[in-house]
Length: 195
Length: 265
Image (tube, rainbow over the protein chains, first blue to last red):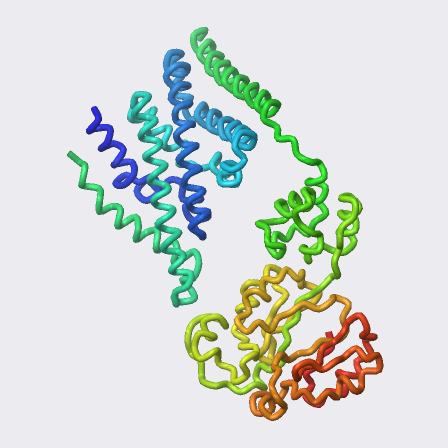
């Protein structure tokens, strides 16, 4: 049980990385990776929201949608849950922890529309039908994978911004190429835990 | 047929119920978690320039507004906000120094008239050029003209013209100080927006030294100071200094300067 949980988490962080091998959450991945500090802020905010939202989505799916036989509505239900949850979280954090709010606050509304959150909930709860603990751990691991990817890209972008690269590649072209090479590199992990 | 209708109603009903529950939660949360903050913060923020230039040393206008209301910042720290709005803010907060409206100027008009020490063919801007023997210009305080200031200006007020030195467009300049901080030569300064003339050279050197470097450099002859009818110009360490409180804007200094380094603003 623990071994397979660990392997599932490892897969979520590295070999099935949400950004680099599943191509979800590309928007914030490219948009918020200009500075290391904001990249890290975004990454932690994603981990946080992913963990909380997948827990609620699991509850809604397994205790409301499945028993009533309307599980085909899961996408709509998850969008509903995630959007209102992020709103609620933002209000709660603003009141309860101003420090956390000033660190994550800017990114919270952005995350509402981050497809990675919905994608993780879909794949963990519906497609893989994980149990509660698995769902929670896998979502945290997926968030960590996002943090890893966005911080790596931010680090590389700090270098490419100051490097002498051809003018036509400056800015987004070189970033997209960088992301592509990173995806190739992460693809190298794909065989590790196949068995 | 009846079963299908029930199915449809069930699906719609459940989604509606979930939405209602979450909506109710949101309303309750909004009620319990509202952060009471000074109304004046929003009013002040609306009056600020909202350029988020960071010239005041805060992250943005929202933070500056908060600091203003709390009394942690001075209104004069913000240079981007128009005077009229500042007066309103001062009224709102019950007093406070407004500060004079200023713009940035480049104290150099050398550019191509200043000799190059070497031929710079590398990558980058003034900051990278400055790393090699203190920049390409013979004058230690001559504008390199490689556009570091142009790159940092949030409003696009700076441009390197035909002369090869940077110029500020005073209509666009919000005096945030980004260029002043980033210029490796430290030759950008602030003058009042109402100023008519400014000194376009920063070299304190002796006449002969400057002459060898640049055909537009100030040689410290003092003609401007002698001819100023208002007595607004004094010589300090080989460079004229204009007291803008006294300057009447007659532009005699601009005409008399033999090196053409006092310029109209």
